[in-house]
Length: 87
Image (cartoon, rainbow, N blue to C red):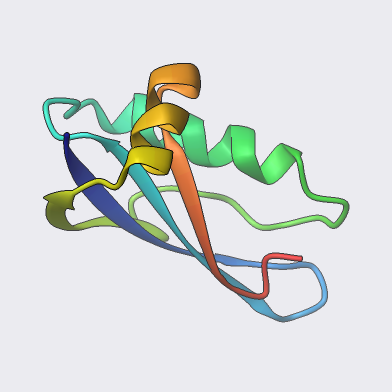
């Protein structure tokens, strides 16, 4: 499966910046849906974060997804890869 990778940086209440990628099917182009996935992910965190919009989340590239990512996308519609300050 080909996926689009959306590079995302969201400020945390404690001053740190979360860095994570939102992976979605490559044919999904609706930014409101993609940002909604990011917002859904942020609600799962135990700390408060800033907003998520086109300033914090941008299309980065497309790539082939490994099986675990494909399973997550089939289940939830998206997959998050946590990079920095996500816990």
